[in-house]
Length: 295
Image (cartoon, rainbow, N blue to C red; front, side, top):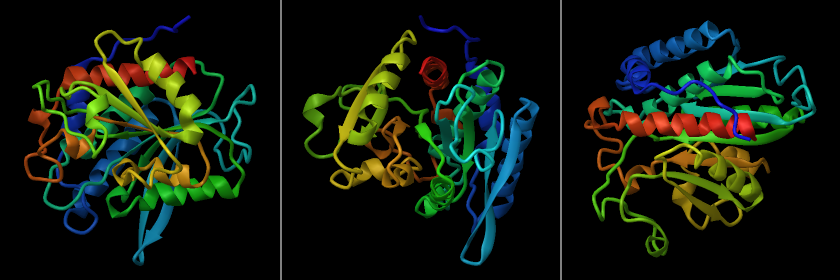
């Protein structure tokens, strides 16, 4: 039986995006990066979630991930178990951007979906502990998520699922609008109107379950890909915050609109809010919530 929950309103996602979109780079635009960081923290707290600063250093400067959770901190519960012994479910998205882009799809879209999912899930009673993670410095080779994943590993946390929301707002429904890495185009649609769910072999069971549950959302096409090992043979699938979790042996998935294989504005000045498909984003958010609730 599929649990029900409030529908996601595209207008609410747009309001969140308006707070986030704008260059968010630690070197060229640290002020807006810090403002978005504070916005995320305030939103998490407004949902009644416990929030902690996961502080780390990079090139001699201090940065932080913003972590919200229901129940005790994962550091205070070394096994990372929920009330019935389940492992942690982690939903993450990075809030920084590269220099020279407003970063609407990359990755304000993921952060907006993270926040809206957190708002709705925080009002539900779940058997497993869910962590909502806003990661910093993903664009510097996943610095923030690597630090957090290693910290969880060091205290022996159990993780049932890590879900990385990476560019989830752009669609191109034209035939031929969707591109792929070499060797994959024969197996997938030519229209870029689906959400991609990618896992490695260790995450294959989670991938099948998560995708099946996301498909319960009407009008949300879902395509999946399982890669061998930790994805090094298809390096493009490693370009987000799930890859540090793969490398530490945790089950993790990448949810993506396929990034530069679909979005021509990737890492450029035209990655703006106006290019995003808010209705698609709302369905993706509902898919994430449906999957988490029913896992």
